[in-house]
Image (cartoon, rainbow, N blue to C red; front, side, top):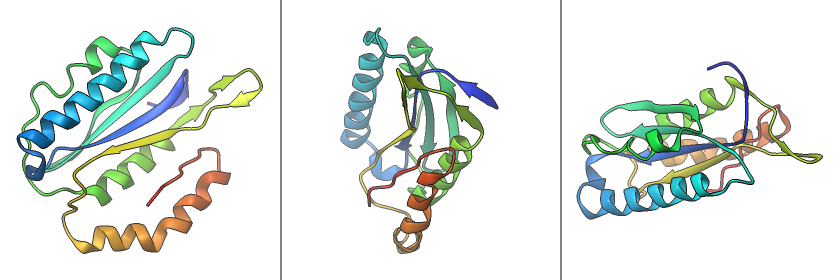
Amino acid sequence: MEGPIKGVPIIFLLDTSRSMRGEGFAQMKEAFLSMIQGYANQSNVDHSVAVIGFGKETKILQLYSNDFKSILHLLDDIVCEGPSQLRKAMELAIEVLFTVLNQSSIGPFCIREKVVIISRGRVADKNDVMYMEDNRHELNGRAHMPHDLQLKV
């Protein structure tokens, strides 16, 4: 999807790895659905949601959309398997952030993109954590580019 989006842009990174099986997935799904339902019920501010799943595969489950009825069912057929590939998910999120032109504003204020990560925190290997630590300043430095990505590590 290229071009402008409308609404507050939010990217969800959802851990669908085997470490999320059972109660972890149930809790993640409950939190995700609660947030999406909150956006759907908030008529005064529009939201545009993208969703990336990371587990056996790291892939875009939904590009920016405000079709919340559809988004509420994204996790219905998800099977938790494979390693937690947080690094790949972050790289894909950066690509998604830079493929759209964010023209969202409320009055005179520009609304910046938000990235929400839901995971148990068990990355596939230590290199993922080291990558994020080594590149934290570089990634935060992009806040001055057209898209604002702020990582809190």
